Amino acid sequence: MIMGQVSQMLIGISDNAFIGRVGTVPLAAAAFTHSIFGLFYLVSIGLLLPVAVLTARDHGAGNEAGCAAWLRHGKIMALTVGLAAFGLLVAVSTQLHRFGQPAEVVAVMKPFFLLIAASLIPVIYFQVQRQFLDALGRPWVGTSIMLVDIALNALLNWVFVWGHLGAPALGLTGSGLATLLARWIAVGIIALWLRRTAPVSGATPPWEWDRIREMLAIGVPAAGCLLFEAGAFGTSALMLGWLGATALAAHQIALSCAALTFMFPLGLSNAASIRISRARGEGRNELVRPIGFGALGFSSVIMLVFAAVFITCGAWLARGFTADGAVIALTAQLLSVAALFQLFDGGQVVGSGILRGLTDVKVPTVITFIAYWLVSLPVAYLLAFRFGYGAVGIWMGLASGLFCAALLLNWRFHRKTAEIG
Image: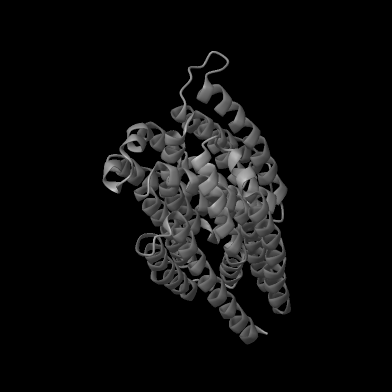
């Protein structure tokens, strides 16, 4: 499941690697586009996370018909949410000039923005089916498809960004087209696989509003958690845009690196959530604490290793995306700050996931609001614009929010599992 999450992120990183060679302004445009896209993507995924939790619970209880029903309802919700989110992004695309971004960035980003917005529909439809297979204990299916999709996306970027095999050189727009095509192909492959997979093959579960209500009871608060976190990072990108294209481009590179390492604890978080839900479905509550704290410990070890990499190799990593010396220098500084919050970032996502496995989602939503909107963003603004730390100050503010979230979420898991045990 970690490899699956890393594979998903590598698509975005390969896009940035191609775009960064086109120029700093296109890279900044991609940064701003992905900051908005990421907000909608994470909220959409949050609404659909119950598919994995509820499927794992019924799988643990031996209810195969229930598993098939969760997949059907999840796919219907994915299409509904994806189309609604795409419509909102189209509306946002008409107002890009209102976000205070550099004029040269806004001038080139709209075609790319619309293509990436359209790719939201296939990407979340794919994720629902992948979560279902993860919950059945078959994570390698989705992961294998994603690994193939990374190579396909890189090939299509090579074709459309730089104009090979008879295609025109479309630059930034070509990267958006490549991502859209690659994501639809992944949907087709996983759909073909699922048609042959029990308990789905030959099953047409009835439509039940009670299942939708149960999914929303978990999904809406989970989406709220992700909204508050993604909103904070999206707002930080907006503030970085006030500092100019160089700061925004450096932010995109550093965030791409931090987001890649984040996929490791995110994969652990999803695995722990599924294992906790399945253990409860089997009636084995004594496994809940070992699963949760084991995931937290493993996450801490992994993120400490990545922290060391960011501190020692920040400039080298930046050179893989751009040749702009100013962007490389600022990226290295941001990655040094990222090294400090790696442990907190892993702790908060694991804490959220293991609580979700207990279907405890309402209080974590309040915790994330406090951490990111009452701590992180005010601190980021003060450090960046009042105390003159600029882009580094914004990232230090993000670190403060991650620390608060990690501490409070894992303390709550400790209290909740003490009650269960």
